[in-house]
Length: 282
Picture 1 (cartoon, rainbow, N blue to C red):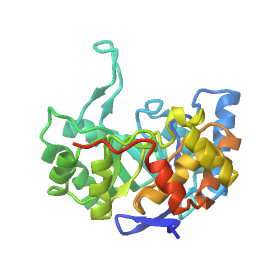
Picture 2 (cartoon, rainbow, N blue to C red; picture 1 turned 30 degrees about the horizontal axis):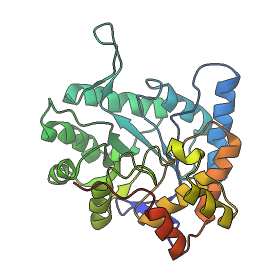
Picture 3 (cartoon, rainbow, N blue to C red; picture 1 turned 90 degrees about the vertical axis):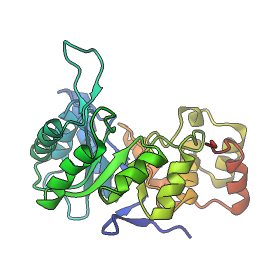
């Protein structure tokens, strides 16, 4: 049976179904109140890993989580991400920014918005090709050495980038896009599996899974589950390092996602699902 707990960085024990906070509404009003309720319910249901980022509302998402959950339960890990610059008059698009001075400012602001003295897991939202990797990760390492960052993670990286980063810092997590119907980053997951690095697939339930292929629908019927639950169960079965972080602003969908941790695929069901989308090679 697949373990329900994974220790990020060999230290932080979290339940393997987490929560992605990106979809939570941050503007004042009924939608924000509902989002606060969803965040609180996630913790009540036993979720111990919540993923956010500066980019999600340009800090407002972090502030919402603090409003909803502070003071935080001792076993709750809120992971956030830095290195994306808010669009300005100079550019209508968000920009990757890995300059040390920018990263320092973002970490300081994240600490303030989350109302913490230490961020358990701080991830680079993207690596900046314009800045030496040693400068980017070295900046985070400085915060780690002074105790304000616990562990360092990466997002949307290749196997080569992961290898290079690991020569500079201990990498505790990787957050790449991956799902039953999107296996482009299979090689990155395999590298994380081999090294015991947490792999947090973002968009873990591919949009197409909501309409369900015939095979997903068949397995869902056999398990008396939904297509989304089957997709999450497949991820949990794929590797013990996989920590799906499905996001939702719905209490019903939240409960559905958490319940997916209780599904068990047979070897035959697993093989049928594996054949739907072969892993990308190269």
